[in-house]
Length: 566
Image (tube, rainbow, N blue to C red):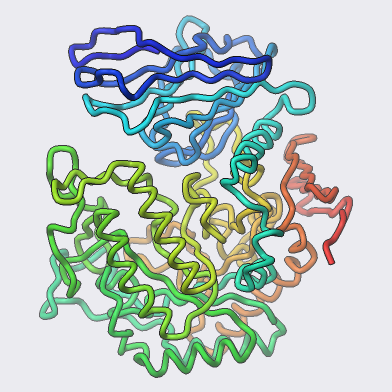
């Protein structure tokens, strides 16, 4: 371990080392003098492999389009240096011809980048803790697990990571959690249907909005129309669906967050919404909604510039993308939690029950706040997110968000999409379902943005949902951006008229019927994923079920059904 000082000197730091035959742990104490240290390079094991090695790195997802991936040593010949910032799982895996290793950053896991380099034919991979003179809030710690035999592959690395989480009690199997959660039991059997009811222009036409200059809201699906959609679902035989209303709040989706009330008048208002909720529940559907407690707009009645989180130099943090409410400011996580604790009970009083959705929470890195009145480090930001999830579960029965960053996965019931993109290139030679190999059977999920509305899209997208063990997820009016940057794709579910409504529900019904054959696997761990030949994948579950996905033929086969729970 080396500390890099503010004047770029490299100094060796004292380390504690624990080691057995299949385990090693390296610790640097938090009690050292870090006032002059810019970063700590945890290059403990040095050279990993060379360019002739047939092995690979198993990499987490970071910022940008990098997905969980395999990076093959023998595909890269030119020198390079790259880094994965903001890893959503604090691990990396190494498979060489000599050994297979899982490394987990278990101390300061939210404050490092993963550096990967090739120089003169030799690879290095190591975490770099970014401190900039700040004392760490806990020891710097990396744990290494050495794997052999049938575990010496990326599936084995994922299984070991899962076992680590299970042994510590950080995750609990769905089969156990469902025993005390009716909402979760229902969710596992149902398809998710999100409905964007209304919105103001996005990107915003007016950056700094007031009640006088606020753009008008587009109504796509008012509460009465949602009721018609429920009737059509029932008519076509979709007996289990979870409905999530997006933009039910004042001025629609991203209208005035963190202000939620009054219920959007343009959609029908509060009494009509309450009647809709009762109707959904009488029809046998769970109905929930979408809230946001991480951002604030100037037009919100509770807007306060002092609630915006500050960066290291004390400046307010503005979201890179303005949304429907105008310029968006990051809320300090501590303030966001306090506001959620006030707003969520009022939302629950409307009658919503099920897997409530809190926007952004599971897809952003822990947000530090340097405001002197409410300083929040990474660890405290994580604690705020966890507390918000726990409170939402108490009120609604469950909690979901985008993504499923590792720190939040144990608290989530459902991830709307785990990754944004399946693009290859850079450090991604081959995408793999690493998150699913770890968390399937403990969290419900949909794998990608493009697997939303999967049955509306081509066969390969539908197969990808099955390959990754996903819960079918649909989004009415997902393509709403005026600039065309619709991250879930241009193919959309709509209900502007009776023909569109019936056709969209028919696509949902198609996916639901397919899902009913496989939904019993949601409570099972994904034990093995392998490409047996080009574009042919075999997935094995903990109950013995085996699924074969053949992209060449455009089909899948349940090769072995496996044990079903009664």
